[in-house]
Image 1 (cartoon, rainbow, N blue to C red):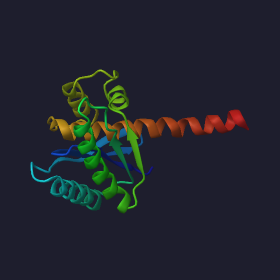
Image 2 (image 1 turned 60 degrees about the vertical axis):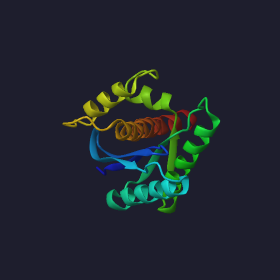
Image 3 (image 1 turned 45 degrees about the vertical axis):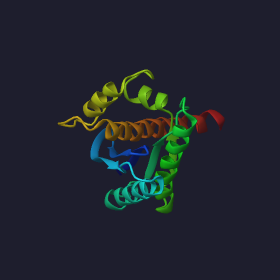
Length: 171
């Protein structure tokens, strides 16, 4: 049985969470997680930090694909635009290294990991710790990235299970 390794990314212009999760059979395993801290400098420098940080994680841990949280509609359009730039830098790092990318809304991620789309960040953090049998709570941004990877694995597993049934039903 081949393990599937996924990189989850929770984009932020100052802190971007990254997490690598592996699925082997029915077992989820925490491989790596961290926060890429871009700081408060100029936007170009922060985007470069995000790009190089995500690139380094991909080189070190060799995931097969990436899952990125979608930008939410913020009440402040400028903040949403900056967040979109951070997300784009992270996605570009993955694409430049040949990774396919899937994206999920915060609602989809929370529902997949906690069971409700209205879960608080602390609930997501707790469930990530439980699902991955971690001996410590990951930082919030890293937990969100791990949750994104878990969501992708749950979604991919469900789609894979449906494919034979769809072929049977259609053919």
